[in-house]
Length: 109
Image (cartoon, rainbow, N blue to C red; front, side, top):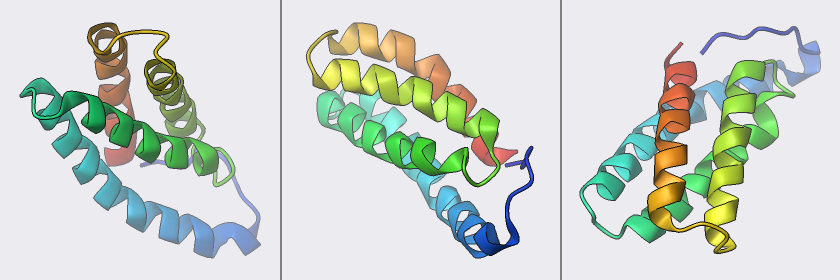
């Protein structure tokens, strides 16, 4: 995960914690993706994915990770649409899977 923006030195400890948490979040997102693709409680897994990316989106921009934050926000919007029943799981997953891949790339950069 590469930082693209400078942040206030007072936010450095928060950024360090965010980076450490994102290693676990990446593993969790991969596991949730696998569960969705294997049909193991895909609806709950997709919603759980939404909770994770919502947290990432809410903090990434502030801590100097704009690309990660924007991708996470995109996926968050898709999961919100599914949660509100504006789209079904099949469409949400078709839209969300490539965005998830981009989020995972950003988390590993």
